Length: 295
Image 1 (cartoon, one colour):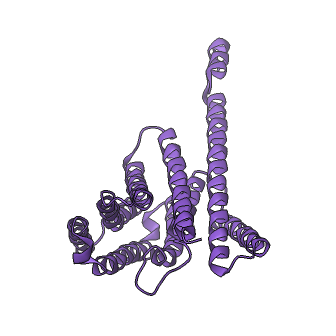
Image 2 (cartoon, one colour; image 1 turned 180 degrees about the vertical axis):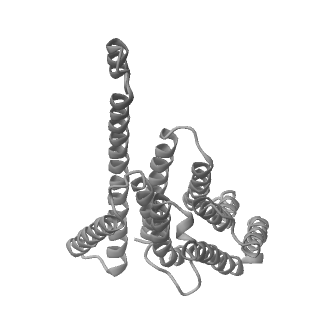
């Protein structure tokens, strides 16, 4: 029972890594990376390194992986602003950018200092720094000039704003301070939701309301399943919350994988329709050969 929080945290983090890898594979499948895709992939790599470093630190209890985790955590605000700049096609204000660069440099240095020397101030500062980065990105999204972006770009930006609303409260649960011991770290679930939103960006037929409804259904069924497990096993509230988090994490990974497969099917269908529409109108042999060789 004493290992239950560690097991729950590890499995939620592992689920988040799985969701990030699925999203990364979707981006690679789309072909050559443009500037926007490159910024997105940078953010994914930072999150994967953070979660993997933290997971290895927990499982091995080796201090070798702790600096890796803190370096990646210090890079998250800067990666968020870089992605937001790409979405909005404009630079962040210089004070914001220079402040994030200075903060990132500071936390990269602090990552390699002994725990006894910098904790808990390092963790307090890192939480405040990450909050500041997400709030700066949120302010840029809300203050954007909608007329300067296409409807598609505004739609994508609104989806990013939805993810920021979820990740901020869940971020706090990942930090462990004296006197605060929550049953499970929830930031991994927020990351999975962001992956789900990102995979859904390729399917513009799904509106924001559809996505919110789908997440509400997943969350409700996870709560029902977790509560049922808790009642059957006669678990206390903490273990019931952990069971609910694990059910929701597994459900989100499955949803991300299914949406990624559906997106691939949509891409093949659209590509086939494009070949039919733009294929040779004079050479039937060339046209049929193109159909046969189509993916």
